[in-house]
Amino acid sequence: MIKFIATNKWFHNHHVLRNINLEISKGEVIVICGPSGAGKSTLLRTINKLESIDDGEIIVDGMYLSDPKTDLTALRAEIGMVFQHFNLYPHKTALKNITLAPRKVRGLGKKQATEKALKLLERVGLTHRRDAFPVQLSGGEQQRVAIARSLAMEPKIMLFDEPTSALDPELINEVLDVMVSLAKEGMTMVVVTHEIGFAQKVADRVVFMDDGEIIETGIPPDIFVNPQHPRTRNFMSSVFHIPVFGETEEEK
Amino acid sequence: MDLLDQFSNINFYLFGTFPKGEVGGLLLNIIMAFLAICFSCVFGIMLGYSRLSCRLYIKLPCIAYIELVRSTPLIMIIFWFYFFLPYLFGGNVTVFWSAVVSLCAYAAAYQAEIVRAGIMAVPKGQLEAALSTGMSRYNAMRYVILPQAFKIMLPSFVSFFVSLFKDTSVTYIIGVMELTQTGIIVSQRQPDKIYAAYLSMAIGFWVVCFTMSHLARRLEKRIGVFDLESIRPDACRDEFMLVPKTKKTGEGVDETPSCCSSDSK
Image (cartoon, rainbow over all chains, first blue to last red):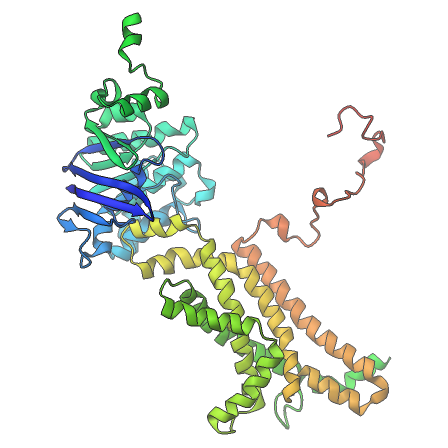
């Protein structure tokens, strides 16, 4: 579904993505983690070409991203994206936020689009908030509307860029619940997150990145509990507060 | 009393010699301002939008035009078009049209900057969100970015329109029969009542400008540019003052100086 082939990217002199090789198959849920500045978000944003790459190739659903003839709007219509800061349209109600793209891109009529949007709002549990403006919604509600907005385009792939990082702790679960149910339905998902619980529950593979490189890839228990690379071990112990060193287990 | 006498000239002030001759007076100011606003809006939006382009052959001419006009006095622009337009169109241009064109050229440069600032003020994530749902750049601009940008621009636009209306008075210098010109004519006819003539002009401008800003405030309130409190004319912000007003304690509560009261905030 998504294939990175020797991808490189520079911001001026800063080498943000170093020789990325990664293949993501249909229905897979990938969690990308790593310290800040590791290039996780950049990697995610290259998939729908919000960031372009300087070298290598990315193939998404058979479309070659470095080919200038690739129809970007068609590509992006197939890829949903959820942002850290929600990025809902503040001048439109929750319902209109969801119906805008289906109407303008897919050419749906007002009635059809509204019906679809209401179904999605029901799914994220926000039917009663359909006429609220984003400022009137809590962070968790905004993010759920944002997910519904992406789903309205019936994408084949969903990208999540730290979807819970800007939320208060008590609001995180309502967003994660939606994401878990989405994963169970077999959506192809690429998620940048620090939510270890989510990763352990639904991730098929975890990708650990540092300094623009993919350091390690593996199933969640391998990466979180028994990482091979010292950099991964270092990060897991400092960020997730998990005793990853054998000694602590043995001492007990 | 002299001011009341000016009432005999009210038709001349408001409409010039209109039914018999050409339109003039305050009505002409309004017509000029209206035409200049309409044309300059189109031109200014295009200019401000193009100025954001990364392509130098689009961006540089726009910057050159905006900076040239913004660093030139309006009266120079008026003279410039007054002498330049007949050269282009062979002397058939009336002073009215040369005034409108110069006001328009002047206003477009300022509006371009307002438009640019408004578009820049919309967070970058909005465009990314719109593009990532598969919308084209045109649709993203039209349905997501510009509606938000216009909301941000509206107060600057209104204050600029009010000042543009006042600037129409400068066109008297090339002989447009607008309110200032009519006032000057009246004052020359009655040299003993000059102050009354000039006062009448001031009232004329004031009435229109005040109406404009009042209507604008209601519009802003309706589309919610600001919270309602900041729009209230009597709103005050004493906590921002360097020397705050001493606090009034209502209903004769204890007048203890703040240094002694225990619960002073």
